Length: 99
Image (cartoon, rainbow, N blue to C red; front, side, top):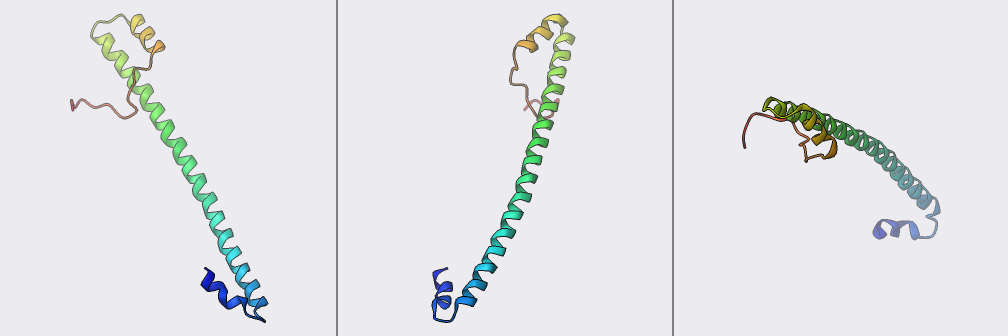
């Protein structure tokens, strides 16, 4: 950058220096605008991922509860068990695969 500015430090180059400063300002302003767009997108994507994870946790909790009831546990006990503790219910889709 210093090498680029060297040309503008000579006598009579004030207008060229001012033009250079304005062009850099426009460049930085366009970057700032793009950063705002990217930040908005990233925030929306993060909210979407959190929402999807929350939906999967709820779905998986219901599947666990149903499975425990199918295995013969008292439905009221199962309901209380999941009200009091999260149990690290996964936030990804459950499958029948035992990996």
